[in-house]
Image 1 (cartoon, helix red, strand yellow):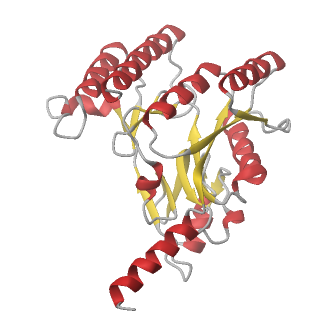
Image 2 (tube, rainbow, N blue to C red; image 1 turned 90 degrees about the vertical axis):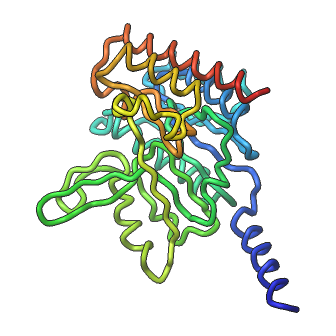
Image 3 (cartoon, helix red, strand yellow; image 1 turned 180 degrees about the vertical axis):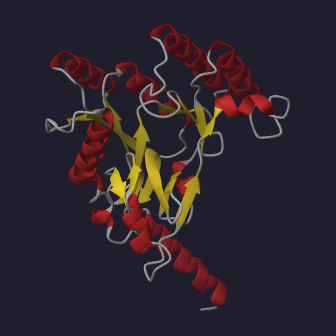
Length: 298
């Protein structure tokens, strides 16, 4: 067998081993927004090029909201798990998110035979997009976060949009998105993955890592005359302009080469925008998604 045939054979077996399950497992965590489940279902079906299974982890704060989410999932034929009750000292949004992530990993994530995705409930694709292609030959993809003081730098990932190849990641059950103090520095959700990166990247394990950085629409205003050169299509530029005219305090975010849009732009309304602004943002987002579907469904 010549070298070329050997290389192709090795690549075939590597691809088979890496992605034994051709369906990508997509997990999200929802607290009080059943309409986001519907938008996920709508945008995934339109834009994702991959075969996938979408699973909702229901972290509703009360029985009424929990039933709404269960009914939404049933209507859409989406698998849904109820997150177990949180301990009294873990009722904050951050702690609830950490608990939901850990529960999802233990329930179905760690042992999945293929690619696993963790995605925020308010993050939506707006262009044709392949998760497998974006992962490429990497083992782990995520949003880069930093914490630093005069003597140290902590690098970790937020859980905004994380891709994990569970067939190639070593020590995968040590992956944790817990927050708290890391090396004495306060970190939010995802901080503890610093330990996994430290122990498995640039070591004998050779984990291949890919970072992206979320870009706030508020920062794009200074580039408004060059957005097309930066890779934004016409409907994205219209969306950015509409959004900035309504709210400059707390915009949205583009991630992963402008293929996905994050509604809150970091946390659950951490900048305390009034409901009237959130509703305007939601209408702008829905118009954007509908325009994108019309554009790319031709």
